[in-house]
Image 1 (tube, rainbow, N blue to C red):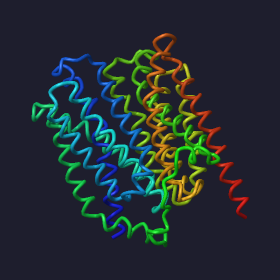
Image 2: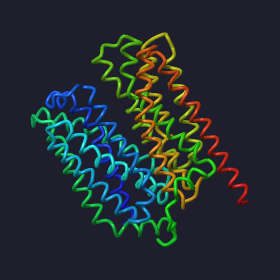
Image 3: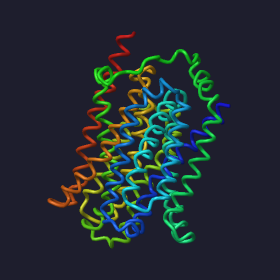
Image 4: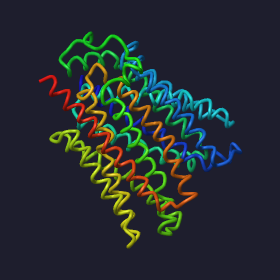
Length: 395
């Protein structure tokens, strides 16, 4: 039964990645059909991010009231309904309306499942689960391409993914008896051993090491998304790549992350989370250094791929070590706020570099990435120092 639930969670992570690339894939056609500027895609994404931030912050309260299985099932149902709403949308304001439940649902699934896996499964599963997200995000453009070419409609691409999400949500509802049973089996404790009261934000932020941990998520996601978003522009303006060629190579970071997380799953069987995080940071530093080399554009291409490989272990390993560092009773509250800070980093820092690139130079991208890299390293060592001092106090 445990294997069945784990397989279902893997499928959930694939489905979590499916909608993430739909908007970008459909937008060249969608914005013309709705008669809105091409820049309005950023507004839709911002509304989605706000929804994910809200649901991430509320995840601890929802967990204590409904349980992990029910929150996941309801959140997945919300995404299915929202994606069906996108299918029916024929006005821009309708996209904004349906972006709200989509963001709320996606944030709930992300926060709850990350905590559940961190509590009940080994480190390798966290890396492989996030690898599965990459698979979903990679597949969705092909779904939208099929819809545009064969079905001659962007909206039917959303319908296809909506049906997939709806079927999965039914499967999660049917699996609800397994969630509490599997948690007790993995932890060797009863369901009543879980904390009965959700932490307030004041209590959470007063925990030693919590703020550096949240800032680490903010900085990591700012670094990852900035590298992904601006890689094509960097290649075009810094190395004069043709735009169509640069667009193809822009996936190098995502490729590195997906492959790296698959490999990291095997490494996590033998290597501690903190060691994998430090190794990842060193690899990101090497990749960023390759971007700075002035000799040939090939170094930049390799650099973006190396950055992706380095990013691969950081996010899942930070999440997985959260229950050990801050305690199982605080893990959902911690991970919920971590997710919120992650989405804030996604939402704010890549556009900030756009301002820097416009007024100064896109060549500053490696420097921008290095700033976040150093901050992540400092925050990580602060959090690890907190864990070490707590362990010494217990002993």
